[in-house]
Image (cartoon, rainbow, N blue to C red; front, top):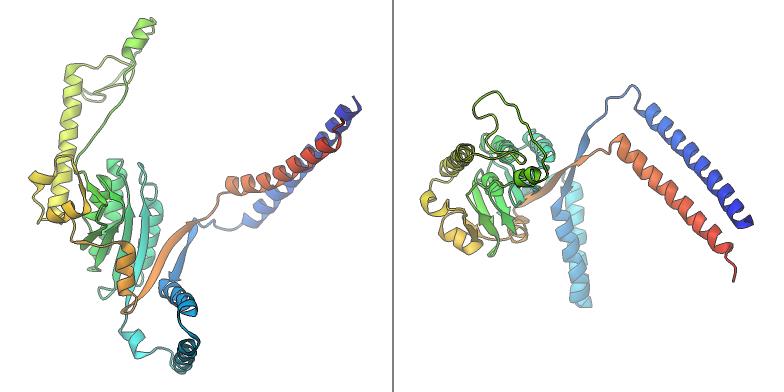
Length: 345
């Protein structure tokens, strides 16, 4: 009983401390944000050339012998002195800017919110002499959200800025819709390209409800307001209309691909099939076989490569959740220690 009493007292104290700390945290965050316009996030820009040089120096430090390392060090020191004397070397002035974006798509194309911010930032500086590279990975998803993502990419090509899309693993359906915007499309040998198709599926519980004497009522205005439903009885007329809408969406998809890649024989490839990299090349769905790493490495000497990403700001709830997790983790640790110290054999 004494153990339970001590345990209860310690728990009450701990909860009081947690509540007090959370109250203070909420007050600090609220005070700091008062009178300020909350920013959604910020753009992060990294010069990728620097990381390549770091990797190169790390390899040389192990591979080269002592005399070669001395020569390398002398050459590097000389170059650094020359760079200090000039704000920009002739090579730097001749180099084009290459901006790298990454899009990791889900069914909702949630990354489009970051993509639009990144493209806006790039368009403040980029010119037709520069290039944008999109490293794209997506299994496809909702028509309207991927349509928006493709429209965001169109902002680049409408400014006559070259857009290279690189697919290392998969660009299916909506992902390929995005890829089509590119001035050129590259893909790994076994990357999945396509399908150019549309699919919709849903379960129907009508018979289950009917078996259990459960009525489902749905009221609509408009003949085709709801063609199929999960809970009501789907009619042949309703299903036929739904398929008609799918076919229309497919036609729009095919027209979109034809508009942006007229070299594609759309009748042959828009069958809902997927195509691996090499087969996609044969069908003109892509322009070359190359991975993103291979392409960027090949451009590091003639381009300044900038990786651009939008880092979303954490919401108040996320901040509080993070703070609370730190606090509760500490309390749990103390509880465990207290409980362990009261064990008896």
